[in-house]
Length: 141
Image 1 (tube, one colour):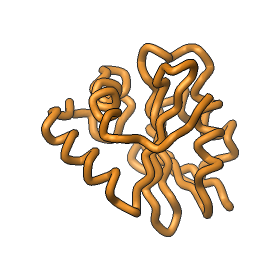
Image 2 (tube, rainbow, N blue to C red; image 1 turned 60 degrees about the horizontal axis):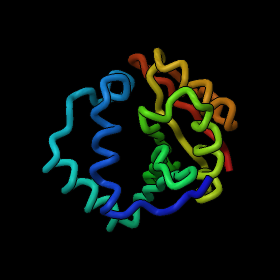
Image 3 (cartoon, rainbow, N blue to C red; image 1 turned 90 degrees about the horizontal axis):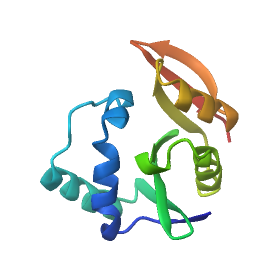
């Protein structure tokens, strides 16, 4: 697996993944994202030192994105290409991406998202609290 920084060329792929019905159902914000708004956000995120967007590839196929929003604890999120689900690539993508991060890491996951909960727990994140259907998982540096 290759992990690389995202570029503007990845924006439309990430939009398709983000608007996938299952992805939306497991996201904190479930509304469909419009292309114009997404492209503006993606461009800002690429230029923002407080964000890191990474793309994972296997055999030239984009399999997903990991995003770091840096702060007191860096928040981590993952989005798997819907065409790549069920291949067991999520753990490898997250594990490889975590080598890019430093400090304490936080993942906020819907209680009903068992796949992500297991993925982050397997990567060393521990549940700290649950509020309003969202679990806060921490991995200490």
